Length: 204
Image 1 (spheres, rainbow, N blue to C red):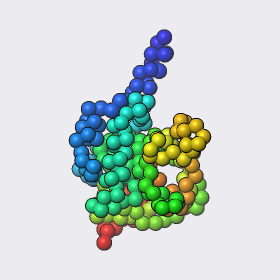
Image 2 (cartoon, rainbow, N blue to C red):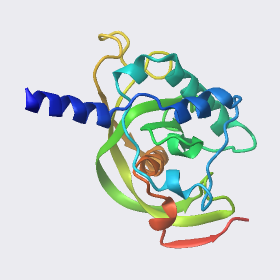
Image 3 (cartoon, rainbow, N blue to C red):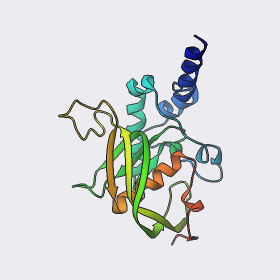
Image 4 (tube, one colour):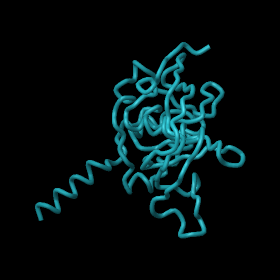
């Protein structure tokens, strides 16, 4: 009984319900959310993010969050190719990225995402970040990222004809899109591209 209770407490801590502050951030913002920036918002940007639990995955609030993240990253004031939940103030494992490897180059959102492994040649290329305005850097990244995530109906469901969206989906991502996934997943682990860059310079 003690072990079972301990396990329950661990799961509750690992997947907490939306907090009052998280609800405030999601509900009070308009479609364009405030983007966290260094060094002002270092507390959230440098923290580890946690998974969504079953309660959050069923909540309309999660869909509202993803919709607003999509709107924010595509707004001309940001004009990004990816955004992570810490960049809008929530330490949760959610990202939205532009899939340059797909027809139409759509933006898609992913929850409880992880990079399971990296492979392929290391490539060095320029990167910037919505949370580090005015700067860019040359960053070494793997050319292939093996990811897994829990897809949600209405956002990304690559196998709707095979049992809907239950269970984790695994994908192999290559090229520039793999770089975006690495950059955004780093945010979920409290890592900024500036700590990986070979060099940094002021953006023109």
